[in-house]
Image 1 (cartoon, rainbow, N blue to C red):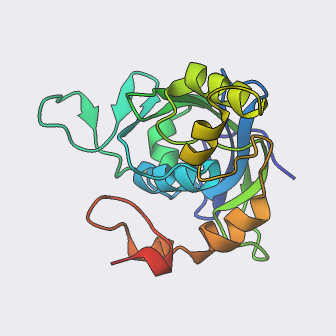
Image 2: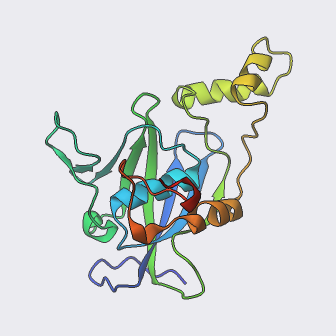
Length: 208
């Protein structure tokens, strides 16, 4: 049972229930995850990438209250290091923004729905819900994704064949399987060993 958010108590086994969504998509693309408050924002970036279906190929940024967290930028001293725990970074905030790919500008709305104690029957992080497929990388943001779906829904569209080839032959906008994400991605990642040189946490099979 998820309890009301209480930022005054932060036990070591504190688990955050987080709702992540792309608010401008229709139908809404969203995910719900449980993750330890001791995870860093750097690790949370990889969690978000995996549960959404992104490919970890573009820059990102967390915006929490007045602060921005991302990889170091020698030209922007206002950006803070993402090597800070989720609990510490939130500091009382129950909502924040996560942006991925500043070209396509995928702005995710993130809500902390509650906090609970960890359950020894689960491995964290875990995806416990969600709907609809992640937009393909480099499809030109929300407007481009809407256009993509329109094209592949009509076999008579002159761009239908080219679009399907670009997508690799198949794409189902309604597809989402949290079990696959938990089994093949989150559950196969060594979160304890830390990120690679690019600051990303990868499944065991993809680590250097």
